[in-house]
Length: 134
Image 1 (cartoon, rainbow, N blue to C red):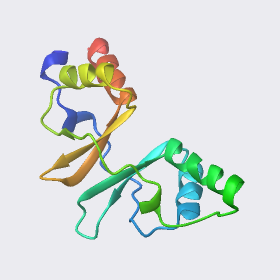
Image 2: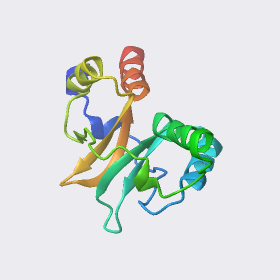
Image 3: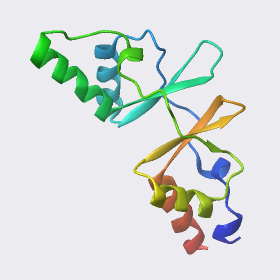
């Protein structure tokens, strides 16, 4: 097998921490810290992707608290709504190029806007390592 034949679906994480729009941001921050993850998808009741919440988004909570004394609110007030996604059938090589062309460390994987997984830069490196080991 060559790296060109590897697909996102073969290396993506399928079991994810997710949030809803109305999740309290402080609860979301606690979950990110507890699970030692840098971000998580935000989904609606049907499982459709509606946004992403990253550590960077959560830093705005600290600014709100510092400037206005406000420590909370729903995830919807802090998440990024314009999310770049990838398809499970995308090749790992094309994904590597997408990572090089963007600032993102991970992409949600969707099928007809329904969240089916997530793939990170580290997952691409894992695919390369497994192939190199033969």
